[in-house]
Image (cartoon, rainbow, N blue to C red; front, side, top):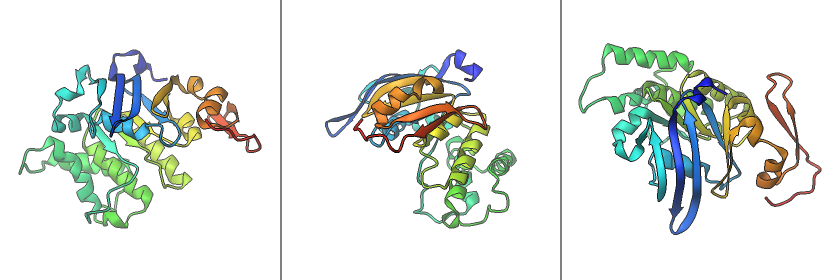
Length: 268
């Protein structure tokens, strides 16, 4: 775990509740993320992972509870101020506009600019640095819509870098990507030296890349803590309905989950 986890939390969630059309979706969620941590949100479909992230970046307002960022209630930030603090990468890239890769990345400057304010040489340098970080050099003038799935995600991550956030929220950023690009996106996110909170389906990838994990099921918090405390046989059976062996990965010595395909199926 990052040494920064001993510091004052950058993001704190206390007793969060959220409902939609009279149906409770999230119930009493509480956790904290410190600067520099890479934290994963795991759970089966319908667990509330995306709903939780939407509450954090105020796409939807929680019914009850407190969310603080840098010791300040997020409701005290206006939308522009919050965008200067948090960047969001969604699982599906937008396809309803035909912009170049460079134009999409430049959108990260918007929270820092007043209307009609021109880009500065410093802005251009930030953009070029971001392009290099995500390895998109030479693709700046290509159409965003013509990129591969992995390239689209790297473009959106570059936009987030240009946004200069303290916290990067990622909602299943590896969804629909092949395993090579899944690994590349998570390696890239890990190298950004940002605080990262992401939802992720693949438990082996979560165990490999994350410092801590938040386990949700049916909108309830089951566990939060180091990977070795959250991923265990009891939780896998209770939440996912699977039997598995858990040992150490031969390459990186993190946890490795091997599912028992012959085990009798059960409903979590």
